[in-house]
Amino acid sequence: MKRRMRTKYVHEGQYVAEVEVALIEDETKWSPYLSIEDAYKLDDVRKALRQGDLASAARYGRIYELRPVAQQ
Image (cartoon, rainbow, N blue to C red; front, side, top):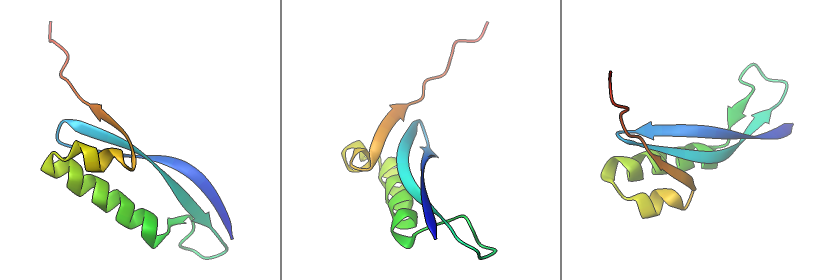
């Protein structure tokens, strides 16, 4: 079993969180997959962003605010 660190992006509303998770690789057909802890971490980030709780979401990674670009 091998673990690779990857960055996952969670987009919710006008915010995006950049969260580091470990992908687990093994000999099963489900590979690669997330640990249950990392899956819950992504769920917690999504919930915090949905509620506008940026302080809680920022505990897991960087938070970005999306802004529309002016149209020509």
